[in-house]
Image (cartoon, rainbow, N blue to C red):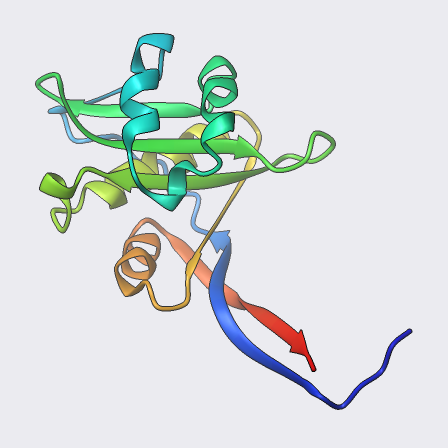
Amino acid sequence: MLYTKNFASRPIGKLYRDYTAIETTLKSEITASFARHADLPFLTSIDDEVFEPKELIKKFVKGKSILIFRISHHIIGCGFITKIHPEYSYYDLGVWVHPRHRLQGYAIHILSYLKTLCIKKKGIPVCGCDINNTGSQKALHKAGFSSHHVLFEFSVS
């Protein structure tokens, strides 16, 4: 075991492991469907770290881990529900909202829908976001998640 006093740490993320199990439904004008093979060009064109690594998007589509949310056939966002480990029932939830539809509460509806879907499948929903992403933090809280854990990055010199 290496012991050194010359290390630094900084918080880089918030982890959301607790939630209220209130069942929610989408606004009536929002539809949700699992992404299909035909959606791959759209999904791979999105320049956002939520869609990283790009090589896994096809696998996630095939495994029904990506949902697309629409209003009148226009995509407002996507949701991800990804099993973290094959032996456990924890699922990482993620959201991407189209830039035209941000700051309108859609992330909250998508997160709530994903949480309800996960719980119905006997899964445990968990989330995380960057420590500086206050918009995501607010959306997660409004969707019923709470954070009691911080992710730290350590460096040794």
